[in-house]
Image (cartoon, rainbow, N blue to C red):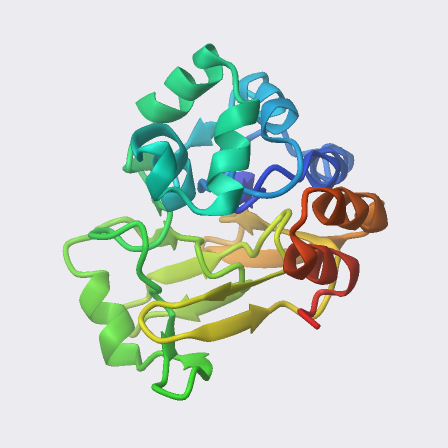
Length: 246
């Protein structure tokens, strides 16, 4: 089995188009999508339009949920913008996506963790706001009860693979469209990917054991940075332009 995993597009349709072209160039036709398709200061409508035509296996991310389920006055600014851009049919499509699913019997898919769509799985945050690798015991505790040999998650935008001590592998493909953000939970912190390129992963079981290849795809990121600035989100613009928030 060989397929591509994408995640955290956040309304960045130019990054999504570049990644889909690269996936096609690799001769891959099967794609899974780990959520957070919308909620970014770019173009949610066009992004979901592409997604709905992909025939990919999808799960819903926390920001997809905020956009479809929260009241407008509860939403973060990027969620409100995405909500204003989406058509009713697109909202219903997002709302109907599952929290988690199993892909071809061998792969468990979720956005963040099996129990919470807004919790880091392979990373932890200190009181001082430093993001670091979580302890293997903590990572394995969250994987209890999952029998599939490959587990895919997203949410942190950090491309990472962890091999559990029982042989299972957890993979975060990185972010297609959001190379940096600030958050307040569990403690205020900044996450910066360090590249403006669109990121995704290729998963391959041809050798008898799952292997991952991370890919970084250049695209016209300055156009998306300009759109974020036009929509009054300078931190997004900085991340999109450089991969850093400055």
